[in-house]
Amino acid sequence: METPDPAPVRVILPRRPGDCAALRTLDTSYTSDLRWRLERDGTAFRWVETRLPRPFHKVFPLELDPPEPPTLDLCAWIGGRLAGYAEAVREAWNRRLRLEHFYVEPTWRGQGVGRALLAEVLSRAAHLDVRGVWVECQDVNPAALRFYLAQGFEVCGWDESLYDPAGAAAGETALFLFHPLAGAEAARLPDQAGGTGP
Image 1 (tube, rainbow, N blue to C red):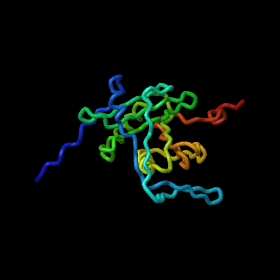
Image 2: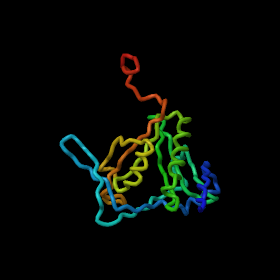
Image 3: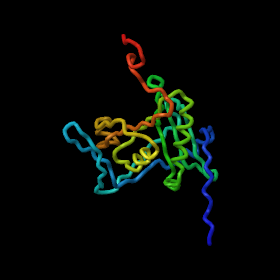
Image 4: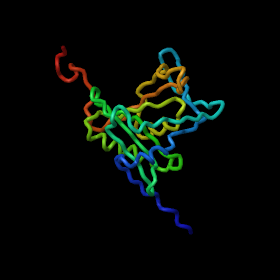
């Protein structure tokens, strides 16, 4: 009986100056023939997964020197090759960690790299005085939406007018997801905290 190959060894490290060359070649694209369509019934809403008439392909730009320095900047490596990347920024005003970029090379998708990378983000977030991790996704990327939901995120909102109709994301709807951190203090109004209010 043939012995299966051992699982690839994953190493997740903070981004280093020398990683820029590998990051420039990272494939941030995805292709989908599905989308989530928003259906309304009075004041009720629901998302229905529907098939597109033709596959949809999109590439996300990755800015290696963003104007807002990331709080977390993590690279996943397998056998010395870059397999994934995550970048997040802490929002001080609402104590939330905003996941700006999250990509896994197509070769390694569906093999646990994304789960391991996101687990590292959540683990490090627990030491950043944040309530949880927030991410923006799109209705034309059901695979990413299913991934985040499977990792404990919940849809916390959407915006049909966020993207410029004349821009690259024309016709897309933004969905927002949030993953609360265990033990993080929930936001409370003054009277809920035992005070008397203003």
